[in-house]
Image (tube, helix red, strand yellow):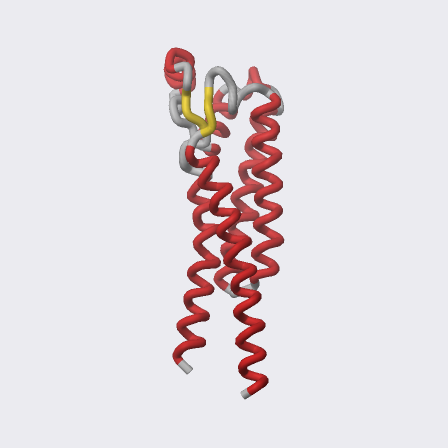
Length: 168
């Protein structure tokens, strides 16, 4: 009887790791400065970290220069909040052991992340001559893959446990 309880806890922990890493990736370097002179200039002008900015730092930078960037600050804010909210919902459902809901919200989070990546690359922010992709970008993708793999593993193991219980 202890084996299913231990397995349930292991699934909950493994399934929660991916969305938690996605939330953490919001605060890790999304970009790495290639042009240090420009990054130092932006840091001095805005008072924000522009050397290794995270997604949250980009929102702060755009909000501080909102008058010159127009609606771009609010678009970046909205997309970043969407990534975080979807990842939080995925974490909540992971703790509740609902693997299908975890996958749905994780895919929505990835779509918002892809939209932000497309927006930044289309405007020449990341990747560009000034910034390269930071390791937070790669961590986010790895966390997505981990979440989907753990959700599938949870569904398969749950089905196998049901079959064993029915056969016994």
